Length: 418
Image (cartoon, rainbow, N blue to C red; front, side):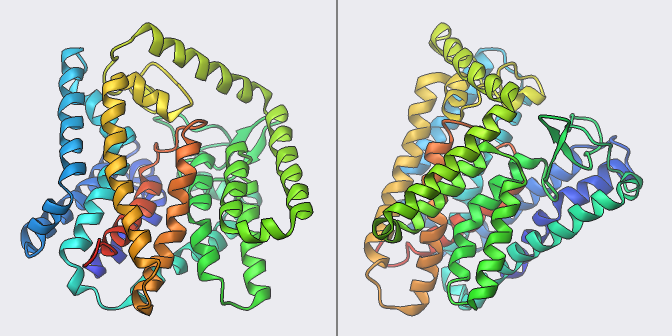
């Protein structure tokens, strides 16, 4: 099982490079869906294999987790039924599952995989692949970006497009462009700059955890390299949530250093305001999109059907809400929203019990995994607030990298008492 997960992890990390080579270089955009289908069906088939082969704890899992499972099934059946009633096509429904819901499927299937096979997992060192890959991604990213600046013609020969924003059906651009005189936004392995900072901020707590006991010079050098990578995405939301992550991780330091904390807060506010004014047209469009989407909800007090809102707008969708909660309400409105919240309520109740039990555990092996889980859980707290500002689940690659591992260690910790 671990061998497959390692190979799959590496495949996901290299996903957009493989897409560029296969879709643009070999098939010239004729089979654009193949890589996505291969990735998603590989995961689903692996899950089904685990489901049927490892049946020792299957019954126990479903007995303990029946409430989120029931809420999940009701939500899916209700959403699909209403969408068909609204004459939404199966394609629209699949688009919604991929962009609006698949992250939850990844999380729940990953949770099942380790729960039913937990006795087979003995070596904690297997988690080393996580932080080693994260370091490799950021270090290679800087080399790759400099190569793009120095030799852009080379990248155009390996199926990248010119400087531009990405448009569906066209080759991935060498760089993304924004604001005054087309400033470059970095993205490297990912579908775009927003997906890249989503990855960087999500895994920032994990990097800080693994670097705790390293040499001070190495630790600070790499952490600042990571932060510079976040800044170079030129994203206001990235800067905001980078600050939020540091606040959650350094509450004790903040209480003791109030003056330094206020200076840091003022710097962060200045950075966000500067980016907001320099990217004023983008800022204005975000504000307008949110209020326009609220009007859509008010004027359509029941539902519009799955695949209506962003990022389905790349296909048949019509509305760009710039707010994940509004996106949910636009697709199925309040009833689906309540069901969606219900699934997370049951998951969070289990997480609360994990903290209660493992926070007191003296078992070193489980404490290592618990510490990792606790640091990853910081991103879940960030997402609750981030959903107010941005749609963040359009990139399945980042969702796989984060949610399958988060799901696995979350439910591994449910062994025995939880």
